[in-house]
Image 1 (tube, rainbow, N blue to C red):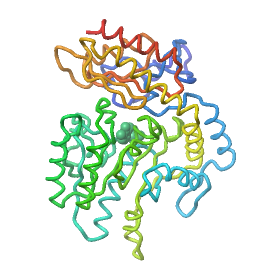
Image 2 (cartoon, protein in one colour):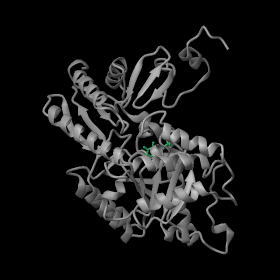
Image 3 (cartoon, rainbow, N blue to C red):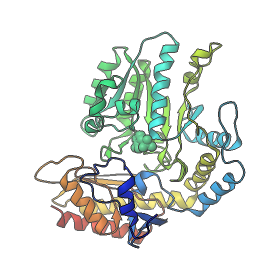
Length: 428
Ligand SMILES: *Cc1c(COP(=O)(O)O)cnc(C)c1O
């Protein structure tokens, strides 16, 4: 291995990155170390991770408490197959997690990432009706939703340029408007019409915040209505909490704001505190019972090699310890307060539109003369400006958002706000 080349150069000759057009993308920044809310690149430059590394890392990088739990598990029982076998970390995690979710959630199924958590929810909804001999093969979802990149998850996702090439191979999905302020009735009316056709097996949604769409926020009340309509029409509801789970919205789960209860919940991202890839889909007893039969063909024939990995479970259990600690709950409230103060300050700025906060998530749109695409030039200018200033942020189109690790310091948060204000003056 040659040592006269940088990591970025060596990367360019052998790696293929996600969501990247390699012909036009700048070279990748090689990170060599991370701690708390900070990461360092191979030249020693420091960055604040203002988006918790794609929302996975709420308790800080290289967290010792999580690392110790993983090490202990690795040296006790690192992995064992989950078909025909079980283990205490998986049982403990189910026993601890299910009571934190709406109380109709009774069964927990493991997989490896957010997309597979969604894939499983959709397969379960479709097979539930198949097992009963009913034909319900379509899915309902919101406009501009993001549910992942595997086939069923991609079908449910509404960001068109992500999925355009595969259109002919996807399951049928119908979209309704997101019930953002002022559009509640339109959304509810659209769902009522479609639900009445009896063709839909499930309605999947990101509760309260659509992450990848650019932190689009809406209230719990219209979502409660949408869930109730689905219940009345025998359509299962799937809350995709892959992004919103584990404190991001201010409560442990976005579903904790609802009075209605979804039938399935998808979790991943922050589940293992940013360490081991793992995901969970939870179900009601009714859904589980739809597969419980003397006929083996009615079982859920879905699994992954690393299903229920004990090391991932140990990381998730340690993550729950941290999430439920007084310190972390105070951090979440602290960040929410600071976000509100900052929005007060900038909301009348001539370039700020649609300022919004939910839990630790702050977002607003930057007013521009022309509208550019998701990965357009303006977005790249913002991104590069933040990187130059030592902040990792990924604006979505003209939306700037901050979703920091909960342990971020007051100084680090202040610095992010200052640089955001500077961007509003400098980046046109
Ligand atoms: C990130 C995300 C997914 C996909 O998760 P992966 O782990 O990237 O497959 C699904 N749903 C939502 C809401 C997400 O934010």
